[in-house]
Picture (cartoon, rainbow, N blue to C red):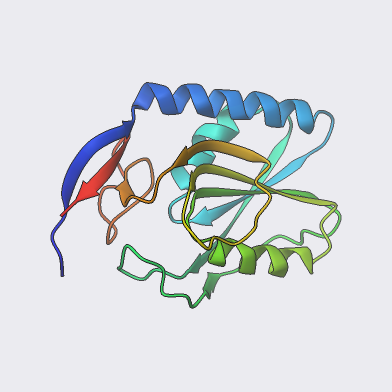
Length: 175
């Protein structure tokens, strides 16, 4: 397995906090008077979801789903596997899917089709990071934190082989 070390810091703790508060204000305005079911995609989105939820003023509930197309690699395998399904019936609910990073969009496209078939009142995406990669799936991201180039990153919930999730900032990985 290739060895990686931390590279440059792409987003500091303070930059992330400011952007999370901005996203929360926008979400709170858009869902004023409505309850939001925030669906976190495990494992990576848990840190972002927790910080975001604490800043949202609309009523929220939570559920989690886990699917993967990575394994222990930094590149998608192209095969999506549902590992944990929702515990909540989402029919007629306002669902906000919270993701850490959208890379190729393959996993999220699969997940959105699956969730849409369950009849939510609305279904939107909030992603902390949107990676700019060629051939990416066409997704409408309602709430986007940061756009990034095609680099491998870790921190703030994002991992490499289950390591680095606990970093309070986001850094590039270098070989």
